[in-house]
Image (cartoon, rainbow over all chains, first blue to last red; front, side, top):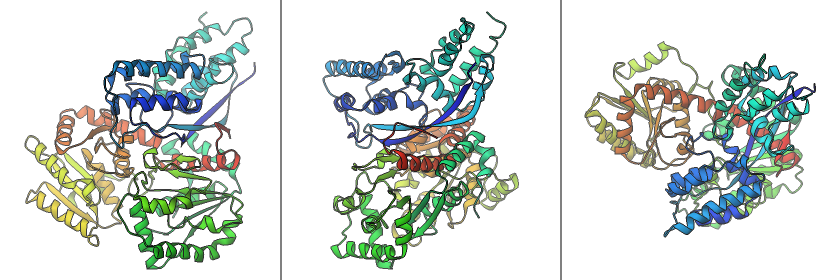
Length: 219
Length: 412
């Protein structure tokens, strides 16, 4: 079996170069033209960024709409968008714009943020580290994941879905590659059972350990 | 004396140090020069004091250069500094010429080291003109703005912008502090040193000694705001909040800050605070000398709740320090306090003395909330606002700048 190489990662954030948005219409205009890296940052990298995990919503657009536009309707609609459920970032962008367009159509007044509360568009460089740790058997997964940094959990379970094979986490991809007659199916099924997007990274780590623990001996 | 990197392992864990050492291996031998305008005093010098030795320990060939200037130069750069933060200041053409001349004089001295450097960090506007002079530079130059320049006095920014836009990149503490510039603008928040006098663990005896010195009652709740006596820190608003709470709970208040004797406005604010406090024996207004780090540390550790009721704020490192002591923070809904204080998780954001009083009373009624939020706050700081994260971002930024400044992914 090819060993699983445990990586770790951190982010280095930077301004995207787009002007900030002061209202819902400007938010829409900027989302329509921003780079995919920007979209990914505000939907997916929020969980790893150096800001507090807002437990209400998992993406920055929903959080901003709630806190600074005071539009709970659009924040709820944006908040339920799961970026990993879309086959591409282009489709995620289209869905996001659809939500905002719908709300703009319903509103008689465009909600504005106060000066100082505008939305800043950012992106990040992902810095990937090889930890030197190798996992050689699926039964070791739970123990190793339990000891991983949140950066490793993010890289292998979330960020991985952006890399080929698209839509698959690294653990599943490794288990499939080394499947040998489907003997890894129980691990793959356990990983697939997690509704991961709405977890914070420490919770996700606990959840991974929980579903993978005790699989030995089961069929 | 500098603290070796290994001393932080017990606080941040081995994975964090492993990342730093891996980055150090990739950058070993890189010639890095930091340039600022003072060797001691002020936040920038404090950062460089710990950062330079650790960068050297990691194998980078790092030096710290300080520009010399005459009193006139520092008057001008103070005006530039204030103008960048929005103050209406008049800087005559002659003033800008003084700024340039002092940079020219310093460049003559620093020329060899600046020309040979792989990376040069120029901190704040004082030495910013060096880039224009260093025509034979080999490395990348990065401008580090430590202040909020989002709403500058336009004439000042108009003069400085053509200088800083020639840099290869810039660094701001928060997106909210930046100005549009034609190069990559990285975001690196500041940090605290958990082993410094202000933040290190203190013994029970050390804490009790401070409590005794200021006559604080250990049996009653204590509210603490640490900050200089400045209008934007709203110390009078804190006294108002205290009075609203005092009607129903036997709280004590400490307002402690640095000296304001040479600052006419600061002195006036201090007088206002003393007047607002009146003869109330449970309000302690402490004017502390600048080196009272352990006293501040002890006051934060004995606090029940930390207050930072600012109406305007930079990043708000006193909030970070309070959170590191495992305390919930009631802070003004401004600046970097927003990045740190999240309602019901690490404390509460408030806009008025009434709001602060309401949240103080809420917390006093929810002792378990005080403990839970304090513990969350400490972990949040451990994860995000300790110097190891700060250093990692500088090292990463160097690696990215030397390889591909706009890369989406960099492998170490």
